[in-house]
Length: 129
Image (cartoon, rainbow, N blue to C red; front, side, top):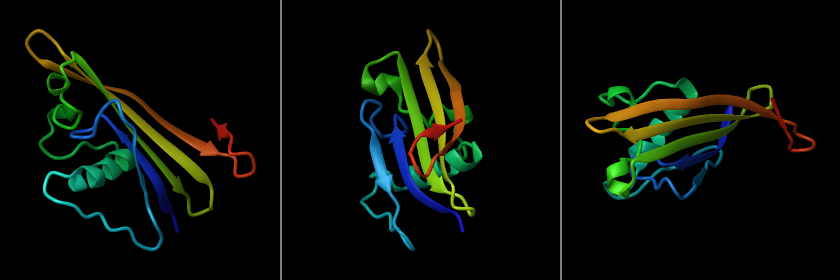
């Protein structure tokens, strides 16, 4: 059975683009609780985006998924989701999805920067490409 170990969220919705927020998942169960607006739905949507690459509903190609640069007083915001999981075969894998939202003169421009899948050597911890 595949299991999710950790997820890093940076620059997605209300998650600050300057700080790395790491969520550790426990076996056999992880509960995600908190008040309205705390980011529970964002965590679930980040899991979906990391696994499938599909943006949440009504997100106009990612515009509402990335932290708004106007809120941060910037012209550009970068977002990233890193998901570390173990495959059914027991291999450690890291999925990295990076995004960018830029404020242009009249509109926002969304760009998916990279999507990377890396395996990790279980003996050395070294990332294998």
